[in-house]
Image (tube, rainbow, N blue to C red):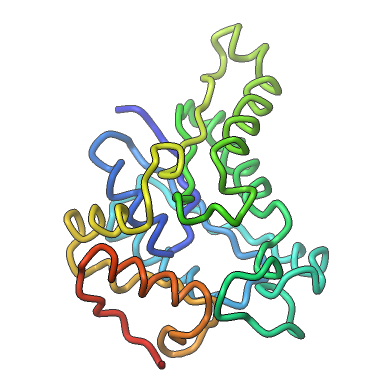
Length: 224
């Protein structure tokens, strides 16, 4: 079976994306602890890695990034308040480039042909979620291993996301519920790490809207 490395956050997007691919690929998950406020997503990722039967799951501590990012964004800053609607302060500078670089390095060592992250069409506000970014990063990485690929020592990779296939968050939710049932409600989307989803941050709001658009009863526990 072909191999794929998944940037596996524990959020609903990456979990549902995995549910689409698990019958076709041997899956390897990598989760990043980068100093994010939402550290509960790491625990969720650990749980789902077992439930979904990932071949291997690595939690990579890159907490030093919190110091590098400083107060550039609300997800790692201890000083800034998380907004309830999109604001560019939510964008962590080239976060997906950092994640995908590490995931792709692992993919080359595993002879995996696919690297996956959960970006979807609703992520249009985030430059490092757009298909043009994924295509250019994919080309750069394969160029960086071109000799190994030409010598037959490495497999070229494709960076895949639901966005590249034209899938929305609601599309992902439908697939997730179809494949995983009520397990999807145990995913962690919130930008905070409270007992339950806060219900008011931009990510929680997007989660609520996507369930509504998909016409799926949202059984997530929210504080508001």
